[in-house]
Image (tube, rainbow, N blue to C red; front, side):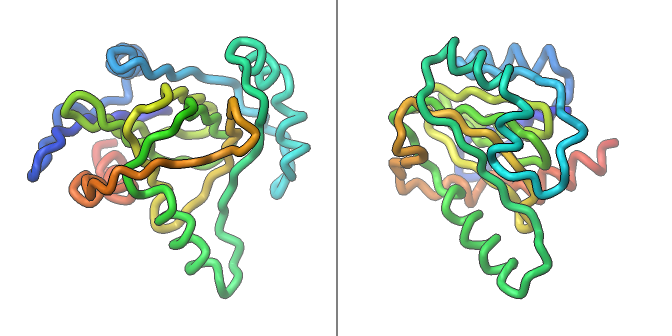
Length: 195
């Protein structure tokens, strides 16, 4: 289930909202032109399924999004603990790549096949932290200032949609705001404590 927190963007951010209510989340995100949809998760995908297997399992949904929005390139991004000696370093490097505030000249559309991550959307003096989990499809309009945090122990698989075959290209703002807003680990720990 999706979880949303909204924070002020000042020097000492304040939390304005914490909710798991689907209707409240949808309404709040609609105010900033962000769309959140849900798909049924394919339960019988084998662990370690490759990109082609994942895309085939979600072919009907993927084709519908392509037809609706005109995307030309679709791929699968994933990062899961694998027990290798270099895993902590690879995880830290991957996390850092997306942790700084940026924009894109394309929409950012992600469907979470497995695991979770938080998209932080910095709009109109607020930061909307959207914790996406398996089954969530988030569509963020191009030029929306944002960042993504997968936590210190990344564990997710997501289908990505692009209008350009170049894939993910970020235009970084240089604003260190991500350092002031609660990170993935803090938000997920807080959510667990509430339940």
